[in-house]
Length: 378
Image (cartoon, rainbow, N blue to C red):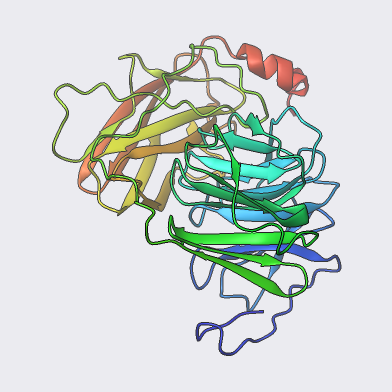
């Protein structure tokens, strides 16, 4: 169902799905995604006039989906499954959670920080490259709403409405559970710290309105970012763990800046497999167009040499993940020592980063996770 007048009128759309649809998320009036109990995701780019089924590789149900922008999204489901896309849903990669417990809800604050809830509460602070267990509330949770890095809601079975005000370190039961005891609270949405709505079985809508809650104090400082990993990272899934470096520009600039290289050394791309590269930025506007151009025998995972997207910044700073792969169809094919260049422009600022095809053709994590890549190529 879709509305174009704030909910006064609703029109039915046809997804073509045979299984029950379980979750939906839209980032604008044209781009939306829906999950199904059969593990499929349906995508529209024209406001729902047409829906296209995307292959996720899941053989079990998916229950919720959330996108940060038109390219970056996550979906959750049974058996501890969390999957991520970086190209609008055309390709999905499973992320490691180290649990078989199901997830029913997911929401990200920005490109890095997000929560997934189900029988447990998990948090990621690097786009899903790593998921950490935070809490178990004794009830199965169905929905989560993230307001800022400290403030989030989780709701679930038997009237559970829980709140964290310290980034998930502690969760407290809120509201009046005796009034809706036995009712399942199925979804939650919050616009700020003082306004929350939740839906419950029996047709209930629960509203919280609290003008006494103070918003977090704004800051112009770049968000704290984890230090870079070693030169031979061991990511937990087929999607390499994004590197989230800490900008080390001294003195702190007052103008827009981009920082790609943090060691002074060229980045290395294996002859086979993927290479994650994170773009750190600061002092940007609330939204900026990011353009990345590749030179040399490498390309992005969709086969192109140029990539453009709109980045919605958090306080003007953050990181944006890119993944490059060697261009095996290049003539001549990539070989150790070949020179590469990544050129990134964001706003009016441009940064160039030099790279090389690695002399060690296979990084250790590639041999561990993809032994089939050792087979001779046709």
